[in-house]
Length: 391
Ligand code: ADP
Image (cartoon, rainbow, N blue to C red; front, side, top):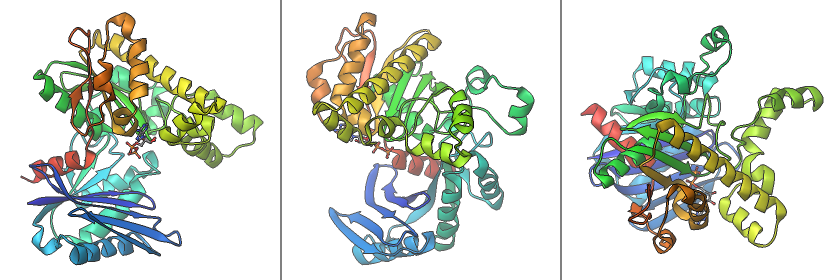
């Protein structure tokens, strides 16, 4: 019994064949540069990676090549016993507080939500439409926004004219919810407590923080779209919205140019010229001023959010780092925790330095807050949610 998990982007498709009970990723792959001249596919099964370089016309072409790869390189899909296909969907608006079987009605809602998720939902629909033709099993959408559906109004509502907000469905929907849910649930299991006050820091290329009380999200840093909040690889995170008016009026920038500026040319890339944290660190070590400033701004924003969420929850039991930067950047963790030392937070630097794929506690026995590293696994979370919905 397996689940095929599909994360379809505008020019890429990530997929995993997952055994949802053991959590094993049986096969993993990525189709890149769809419709862009030369495309790339990598497919890994049983320790062997196959790489293909060829034009990939569209998502249908990409997925049918993936099917060929499964049948040529394994595992054969006829023998894989796929029970359900789970699709990642970034924007579920106010409609979905959990996963949903993709019926024509659900598909229509995902389509209607494209204006709120213009970078993601149209791409997800391409993957959904193609996969539904290819796999005659139930298909389930798992929404990044679902975990944040129950945000209290005080956190979800923007202080703008409420009639305008209502007309345009403007509120804070959050994102990365599948990861924040997965990681905060793991923390509860590791610590054996359900009533924890937690902060989860998902620091990847996109980055977000959440505050979770007794398993329920009460705050998150992403808003109407994944642009709000922390400094990210290429997104600005929080800015004064008046910067947009200023650049439109004084800089003659169009809406599309502003969108590109804030989503693709800002964050670490805007300040240091590189969006990849490893590259920024490397530049900083060699004395690059822009990279050093980028790291300071990144850390400053992170610490502000931790302080804010700690206060909002009236306490903090567990602080968890996850995703590429959170799981791997020991220096960032060390520097962030040092800033929390006036509040009694302490980590064991030896434990902090260990590289591992396992969830682990890195705080000392006498720390006021338990500090953890919990590797996220959105594909497994999607597989398990899809499986539990159909059973
Ligand atoms: P996403 O899924 O959002 O594309 P990931 O969770 O894979 O992103 O995180 C990618 C980020 O993790 C990149 O900025 C990368 O530089 C960073 N990263 C990976 N390994 C390390 C490391 N050892 N030190 C610092 N950053 C790292």
